[in-house]
Length: 607
Image 1 (cartoon, rainbow, N blue to C red):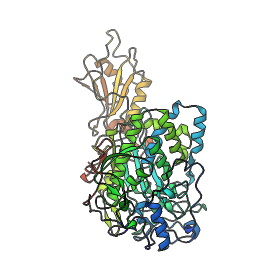
Image 2: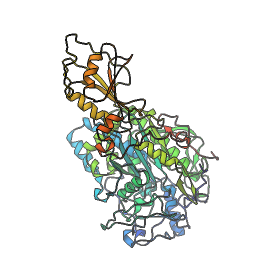
Image 3: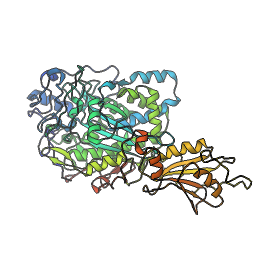
Image 4: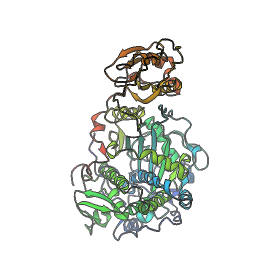
């Protein structure tokens, strides 16, 4: 992986200057987009601190006084943004100082767990906070949906987008001073089917990408855009709307990864600031002290200390300073900043988990979270957000991982390294964790591969008269089902057949080997007669005695073929083998949410 170069006022690698820039003019809007920022939304700034002297607000004023050039090379349809949706290497996409926190999405969703115990007045108040975007703007050409396992569980993919919209007090907090909204940070959160593991993939904002057709505010659709000047973060700005274009970003993520996005959540600066206050601050760690001159290099002096070295609690403006910090630490690149953001997200989630369902803390948190959200229509109520939140609460901190797809420089921008990045998308589509574990079919409460207690045989029960299609069961017989193939959904089908025949299914899991050709019924001591009854439901299956207690059905390719294989569930054709092991460029850079908050928070030399 190429070593990141220091970024300056334009945000491009190797340049110099401060994050707000002055005189270069990169990052401002042209034409109709140069209008004043929209008015702040009601109630959005109640707990937002005033800008700190010598901080970003002064930097913006300084930039304005020196004059700011329009963005060059931006074609399009004028006020509608034209759908050009791209940035050249010297264009708007290079302003990392407007990087918005991906932390908010996780916290916003997680906070809503508490709504289950609140009254109707609070419910309606929070529901009134939620804003949605039009689902008609989502592409019709999409990856297939994931299939559910025997208990109805399936992976969930949540796209978290940070918006630096200028309304609602965001400008005072560093959201910028030009019209429109941008998505400088995006994370794709994959929750595995077992709902015990999750992975958040950060997509660098200046990654070269293909932007598929996207719907504009006037109802028209753009053409597909690709080339050396088409950057990922331009998708959100397509159309020039002050609220951004989350559907276009979702379309672009699906095009880039081949992964279907189930839900999209957009969050903003002011909500993030309020949430960090609602939880009483978040613990962070820095390898060196940070000064005003690091936060705003345009001051041209060191200035007062803003954040001391070592562990500390931050909220509000200081929390924003920490996650937006780029200069004065490491090599000054966005890569180091992304590492600190992942550490911050982990710490904030840990803070919320430790506080539990304390209304004193979580009611303000939920209020701040819902005020900052803009979601797809599938999450347009507190009930739906709460259901999603409850589905995430069983994920242990160690089993929540953060990664960035392997990248390299392409001029001033980034390109994802192939085939390494493709192997990451493939593993996620197959529901494989970073360590190669297949999380599809693993149930939250299902027993592991431990043997079942053997059922007590009934001596007088007939063993040879049961018809082949309806195994007569007079005493509960426990059966575990293992999928010995790579075809999703088979264990669920077999489980339904067993339950219909009055067997008790103890769990559905993936077998250690997924290359099994013939279905096998394994049985422990005293279980042969019951195993024969089970075998009657699986024509062609073989019986095999086992040292383990109980009965297990290990499904093979014969069962997959008899049930239509992958086509039976509408899923894409399964590959004959499991995804290839992930390269070290992915696994060695992964961060667990329970990692030391002082570790892995910089990149390169200089701090």
